[in-house]
Length: 511
Image (cartoon, rainbow, N blue to C red; front, top):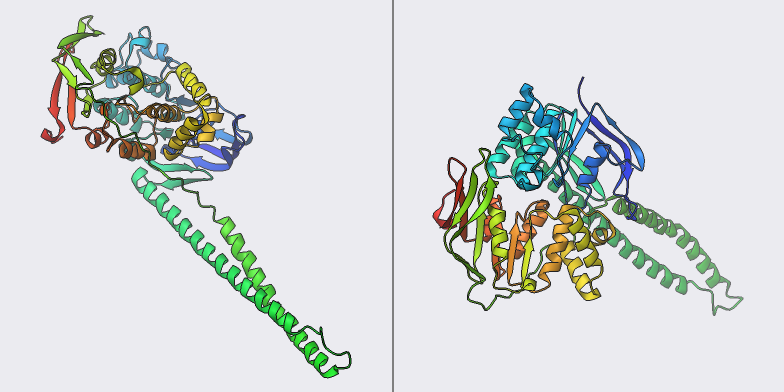
C-alpha cells in the first residue's frame, strides 16, 4: 500500500494571533522527500506538527496512511523510544547505531552530549521506528560535514513520506523531489529539488508581479480616461443648460433638447468605461502578490580601542572521556584576538569548540555589554526570558529591534504576540537586542542554525562590512569563508584522546 499524507481545506491559527496561519490549505504528499521552505515564523514547524497530529486544525482534515514521527529542532530532551532503540539488537538498530555512530551510553549522559550527537541519535531512533511519515525539522543543525553525509545517506534510504524543513541548500537538493513554499498569503508546491523548485517559484512570483503591474497600469489609464470624460461631460452640460433662455425662445430650447438626447446615447460609452474599470480593478485585486519588505540590517560601525579583545596563554582543556574511558583533552598554543580580527573556529562534533568558546568568554578584556554572544541553542526558559525582556524595552529601542527583525524576514508583531517563537525568531530577537548596545565583539556558535535562507544572506551582508571583532563557530564553510580571514581548526588524533588547535589563513587552503 502506497504511503501518503494529505491536507484537505485545513485552516489553523494560534490563540495569540489575529490572522490565520493557514487557510483552506489543500496539499498531498507522496512517498519521497518534500522540502518545506519559508521564512522563520511562516509556519514550517507548525505544518510538521499538524502532520504529526501534535496540533489539530481549526478547520478541515488531515489524512495519514500510517504512523507519523516528528523530529523537532530542539534536542533538550531525549527523543521518544531512544532507550528501546539503544537496547535493540535487530539488524536495523545495529546498522543505524553503527552508521550514525550512536553509542550505548547516550541516554544516561544525554545532558553532556554535543548538540550534533543528540541530533544524530534523535533521527536514528526515528528511522528505527519505520514510520509511514517522517517529519524532520532542521536535521543538519549542529552536525559536522562528515556526520551530515552519513545522515543524508540514511534519510535517502527512507521509503515513506518525508517532510524536511531545512536551511541547508545542499541537503534539500540531495534529498527532495519536490518543495512546498510557504510565503503567506500563498502556499505552493513545486516539483524538483530546491534549486530547480526555487527557480520556478521565483519565476512565478516575477510573473505574478508583472501581471499585477500591468493590471495596475490599466486601472490608472482607465481612471484617467474616466476623469477626462466626466470633465468633458460637465462642460457640455453647462453649455446645454437652458438657464438664461427666454421662455418663448423655442428654437434654442429645441436645439438643446436634441443635444441632450445625443448626450444620453454617448453616456452609454461612459457606462461601458465604468464596467471596464470594475473588471480591471477586480483583476488587480485577484493578483495578490506578496508585499516585499526591505531587507538587510545595519550594525554599529565601532571598534574597540583596546590592544586585544583577549589574550590566553597556552594550555589544555578537559573534554570528558571517550568510549574507552580515557580522558580527552584539547591542547592549544597562546591565543589572542585583536579588535578587528575575524576568526573562524572549526572542527568535528565533540572536538571541543564550544568548550573553547566558554573558556574564552571567561577571559575577555571587554565589559559584558560590549559583547554579543549567541550560543548554539537557546533553552526554552532562556527564550521565554528574552521574549519577556523584549516586551519591556522602552519604545524607541523596541521599535529599532522590531525593524531589524522585519528586515531579517520575520513578522515582528507575530514574534512579540506568540508565546512560543521559533528558534530562528528567538535568534533574530537576540541579535536585534544585542547589537543595539554598539558592541565591540560578536561571538556566534553555529549562527546559521535555525535561520531561513534569506536571513542567512542578510546576516552575511550585515557582518561583512562591520569593523568589530568576529569569532564564528560553524560547519557552514561558505558562510565562514565570506566573513573570516583566519581559521582556528581543531583536529583529533586517531585514538580520539587528544585534540589540538591549528591556526591557518583561509587563503592558504584550497578546500
